[in-house]
Length: 531
Image (cartoon, rainbow, N blue to C red; front, side):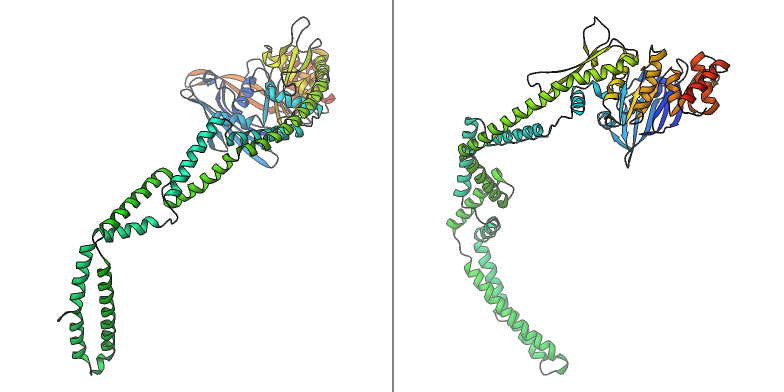
């Protein structure tokens, strides 16, 4: 439900704020007062085409905001149309594309009349409308088609083309053999090889360094001798007993370290052959990483994936045979379900067309006929609503109807038959050229539909205005601003005597006409609305 509407600088509207309730709301006023601008504002909110020519003269941009409530959720939509540049859209204060706004808006609002934002002009929505009327069980067909899609995807993943599959198998075999041939098993091998290469590449220097270190520790006057002298100077002196023990521990540790250094140094032998092997191995591993991953862990993971894919492709014949058997069964089910759906749709189409046509008679389209066609190679899918507006004229798709009034009344008739759809319906030009008994029928139809939807109608009919739950009177006046005359539109709900005045104006053009006021009161009283 649309609760609030805020408009700035649209057409002759300067600034306008309106609050709406449930049921039927009518916009009334003199021709040119700006009623259609209210519909234009709602159209912009739900992704309608932006026309910079609609921006108020002298303004920089048009801004429209609307607050909607659906169930327990509230959403605020906003559209800004600048004089220069592209329009902007917002959903709950966040920037969105106009396409996103339209997708969101089409769930909330349907406009009927001269506006292009009409869901029932869509072939898919017309098909869904027929299914709603016919209570079509689509579940078996949907499940079968979904399963066919899954099977086709599985077949494609296996490599549907024999040559493509053979090329992939050859490539995978080469890659698997290359990785296996390299004998990679330890992800940490490169780290070990790097350390070994460092030792082998500088073995002589490592030995000399070890020898120098051992000599510095063990020779006369070396580290051990110096520590021994330090101990001799301190022993038998009570204050230094603990430190003497610590120095003796150091001598033992340094002696052990000296032994280890000597052992490591002696192990650093020159081995040009092994050094060459290590370098070649490292280069080989680098090549593998260049092809198959950032690290050896990635290379091993790629090996596992390639083996699995290779096994899948090599067992192609068995898997394909199983999948194709499944596909035959599912395809039979899909065809059977499609035929069932087609029969249901074909049987219901004439009844739906007849039901819609029966409502057109009371909407000043007595000779109009709606036909529902179910056609196409797969008759389960192609549904089209056609209108013959006048005898002798060929039926035309709803999207090709030139008259905004005829289209709006046809949409109203459809909505009277099919109650589901967006919660908010907007009708513009729906009462064009209507009067007398047809006006009463139009009013009754809109009032009935308003029990299931929130309805907005631009109307010139007093009968329609009288049955509304809320009437918004739109007017315009010329004011002087900065020494210049400008036209300003205003709109506000009317009730009580003000509503009587407005309906009297609609009846006679004179709100002060006694006869018109009496008639207005009668209309309101007959609609159970206290004037």
